[in-house]
Image (tube, rainbow, N blue to C red; front, side, top):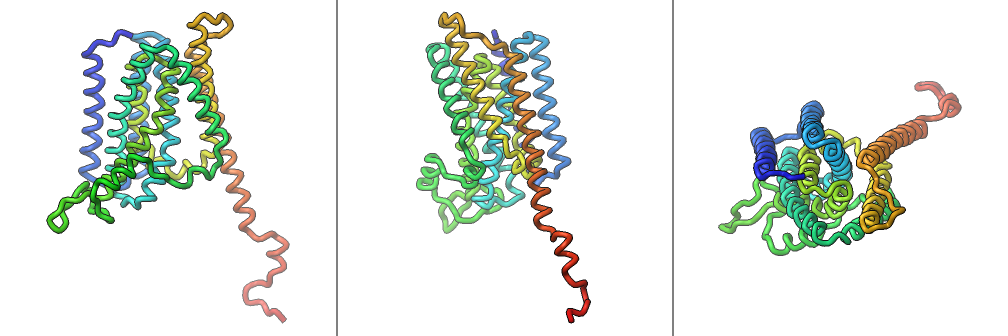
Length: 339
């Protein structure tokens, strides 16, 4: 793709406008948004992404349009998995409910800036060293294997990363929140509040997730513009998605398994296509529409299977909690003489 500077400028400007609007709405009325409000916002962001992809499809062709949709759906699915950790961070630091929107928004903006730098480095590395495809492919297959072996209870605790531990040691902070303030003055000394620590936790944790997601999307498209926009659209609606499906996440019991299959597929695709370009005749090039079908099909099956599994578990728990008919008949009625 030959993306002119003014297209880049318009895209980044549009994203900044959306971020500014989000900041304005959150600062004006900090609270826990309702399910209806979250649904409307998530629907708007999804509609924007779909409209952008369809416009790209019409202007640049089916190849690039398909690459955007495959990348966006993959990044969005990985972002949903990230919400598990966001919830754990909020609980670990006991973030007041009315401040959670601001924490998520600033953390996501920080993650978007860091991912932009990551994408630039990745694109430059791929353009100079084509063997990086083998590295990315092997890393994705290894990540998929780890996810596949992961048990349901492995994500029940949040472990601080090195960046967060460094901030804790270097930055003087208060033990309690002071509204939504990042810093306050106590005893004549300026100190930071836990709000800063939580935002660093959200941003750096999401950057660690980018170690999986950035190689994954480079396995679907090598166009920096598509990689950036797919990541941006996936992250922009994450704040509202947090409040919309926070309770539903526990029911997506097979999500990590589905994501492991997606990452494994993309890793294999990367290696096969690299071999094809290096003259290995039997190694096929997998069309982007086939990749899109595999990704959508895997995620759909994973979601349906998760919901059916959760429904069956809830039904069994309800049956175990209720007394059996024989036991109910054996118990004396209320007020009945026991002899």
